[in-house]
Structures are given as structure tokens and as C-alpha cells.
Length: 232
Image (spheres, rainbow, N blue to C red):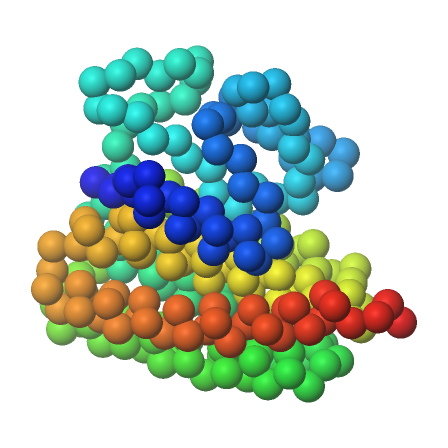
């Protein structure tokens, strides 16, 4: 089952996310997600609406015995098998390889190109590690709603990049890199590591979690430098 943070942990996470330039809303739930002209419109439980190009991940936490206060939202706890966890991580690595390849071919900033090359190299290694693990442990990757959602979101973000060029493309690509890595880290910390039953899988996840953290820490200053640069 997914683990919830206590008040101190939640405050720390909020400050970390806020440092990335992301607005944090607490004490509200997701009422509705609708298609809008610019992408999607999210209606929160306090009546606020948030327009966005894409919803990266939407979920809620409540006690197992409570009824859902929002019609249509399931209170079922997300439960994944080892095979499904393996597939989630395959999708995460494949998405990073795809965006890395995109950056290699289209980025105009040297730091973004170098980072993209590294993403292709290191996430290819991670994908191959998972493939060898699957054979060794006789695990056949299995799709789930989560892996399907991650794949669809990555495809949507890839399509959004098509119309961008130059430094706008570079900044958007690094925004995507931060989103993808932060989402993978969050899923690993709150769901995948705690639910994995296979010891070899858990050890591989732990090692790849450290790699994801390193990529996040490397991506942030690149993104910040692009964001702070004067407009051309």
C-alpha cells in the first residue's frame, strides 16, 4: 500500500517542491478533471480551478474505512504485483530514453544536449538491468492502469514539444525532465519500493532510485539557468 507522510515529512516535501517553482495546494481534493481548450481544467474541492497542459498524477489519500466524498472517485488502494512494478519502471526508463533522444537531436543549449546524452545512456542501462532481472527472476512485465497512464502522459508531453524551438524547447525539455524524474521518485518512495516482494527487484529499485535522485539534482540547475536567462 502507498505510504502517507506525517506532518513534518509533508512540510519538508512541500518546501522541496516549492523550491522547484511549483505551487503547492494543501487541504483540498480533486473534484473534477475536464478537457479544456489549452489542455485540461482541474476543479479543486474548494472551488478553485487550475488550467494545465497536462495532469502528471492525480490521487487522494483517506482512511481505508472512509467513503469517498467525491462521486466517481474510487477509494480502492493501489496494489501492484512485482510484474506490474517492473512494467512501471520499464515505462519510466523508456520515457526518459525517448526524451533524451529528442534532446540529443533538437536541443540548442550544450548543457541540455549533454544531459540528454546522459539520460539515454543511463536509462538504457537501467532498462537493460530490469530486462536481465525479469529473465533471472522469471518475472513477465505486466501492464496496469498506472503504467498505461504513465505511457499516455509521456506521449502527450512528447506531442506538446513538437511546436517548440530553440531556448523555449530547451527549457520545456528540462521542465519535462524534472517532472518525469520527480514523479518516478515519488512513485518509488510511496508505492513501488513498499509493495515489491521480490528481494532482487527491491534491490534494483533501490539502486535506480539513487540514480533518479542524481538526475533530479543535476537537472534542476540546468533548468534554473535556462529559466533565469534573458529572453532572446
